[in-house]
Amino acid sequence: MTAESTTTSAPVRPGNATLTVLLLASTLGVMGGATIAPVIEVIRQALGVGGTAAGLILTSHSLAIALASPLAGRATDRFGPRLPLAAGLVVYGLGGGAGMVTDSFPALLVSRLVLGVGAAAVFTCSTAALLGLYRGEARDKVMGWRTAATTAGGFLYPLAAGALGNHSWHAPFAVYLVALPLGAATVFALPTGVPEEEGQQGREGSRRGAVRLLRERSLLLGLCGLWVATTGLMMVLAVSLPRRLDQLGIHDTLVVAVYGTVLGSGAAALVGLGYAKLTARFGYAALMRFAAASWTAALVLFAVAGHPVPLLLVPVLTGVGSGIAMPTLTILVDHAVPAEQRGTAVSLQATALFGGQFASPLVFGPLIDATSIATGALVAAAGTAGILIALFRLREPDRPPRASGSDAPHPAAPAGERT
Image (cartoon, rainbow, N blue to C red; front, side, top):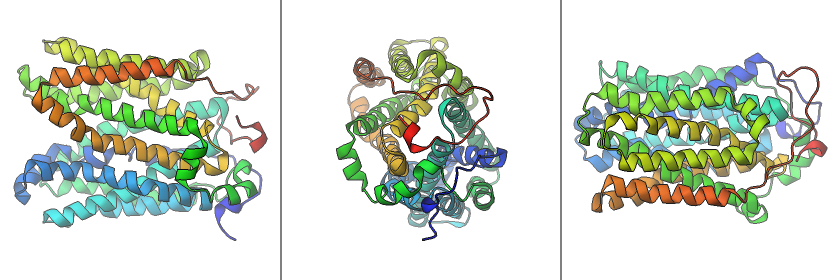
């Protein structure tokens, strides 16, 4: 067979080009809906659709990601991340860029679903590649960098799209085309081999399905449930913060952007850059408890604050929690499964993350409409407080011995050294 996952040669030391491509690919995961958010009202009016249909334009790709991710994970386990990632980037670019020439709601909705299929591969394969190529302190470092890159993308791409939106509502879809050259770069930058731990052993293990993996690995099931819960609960802030600011008399879209994007992304990026030092000092379990505490504080403050100034702390606390949780949960998911099933495990994480994101407005929207934003936030705070209590049962995973010498990123260890 020629599949990359059957390669049994020695692990390939990843270079700067490999890391750069993977970090750039990581920036695309959050831009699916955020990129066109600044022009969604213009799109709604141009296509003559209602608010619900406009919301589907923003969220339908999340449903596609949730459904397609297990297939992307299976392909990653079978062939390695290189070719599925390159193909996913091409699909992502074509699906997203199709909005430049689309003039009907059904066609635009189909293109958004295609975008989601590509995004599923991009998220799953880039994550699996980073986890497979690095280990120990180097893995903590690059996963922190990935968080910083992801949050930077969530800030920069919408700004670029907003600027392009001054020309026409079609123009912001051009931002998605950045994935096409990145797909070509992936073919040349990523190693054709995979770490030794994912060699011959993975040929049989990768045939196990996602459902069986969840059934056999209770920790993975719990972590995926945690992804669903945290994403769903924190979407309450993402959806309700602009509305709450409007109630407090803040109507300037730039100020709303500072509250909703700049502060949160900045906090998450700073945490990501220092993530390796944080894990070395506190460990993964303690950091997850701190993240849940930050989310709870943010939701309670959001519910009770009656002035815009205290609300400045809400996105900061949210960003700190997200900056910790994104790399930590990803690493814990990797610890929970054999190396040869890493792609499937990461894909289940993507399904949980984006499934929770898609479902949150369906759960909390009616609750908030029937009561108030404050009530919805307090219910979500109760949920994150419950998560905090549950996290005291989370055990710290075993760590490989601290490497001596260079602290530079290095490939994953053979299977015998995994925890």
